[in-house]
Length: 200
Image (cartoon, rainbow, N blue to C red; front, side, top):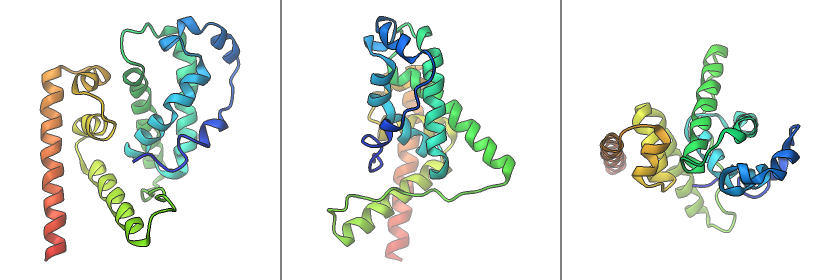
């Protein structure tokens, strides 16, 4: 479900903030010994997908992603490697997405979630099916309870293990398993309702 171009062209749009070269030189203090630009290139697609799945409209994704990585840059020296990079990064993503949603509500704007175009190599029927599936998942995520949505997004869509999800969300492992199980059940019910409405 990675947006077309998210991991290819957009990382090149990085605006280097002051001190980035110093952080790059001090790579031993960064996650996995990577410099800031390495982390940006490696994790930009993950950040982009999560922001979009958490309700940030397409028109605000550039600003939101930039905010995530500005925050990452500022906090990089505090990372001690006690959790996986994606787990740590998702905490920043959640905060930025929540701020974006609050800002939209204050402005009274409700933008429809957009879906990125599928591969141009696909046929018309496949393109239509891909777009319909993406819209279904996006709408399901927006209706899902926030706590279950976080777990479902990371485990089902980002393919993180449930222990990694529990770490990312700072919740007990048993709670993560319960939320994931319940979210999957809701997804299956939503799929069943979708199929029934088509048959009807």
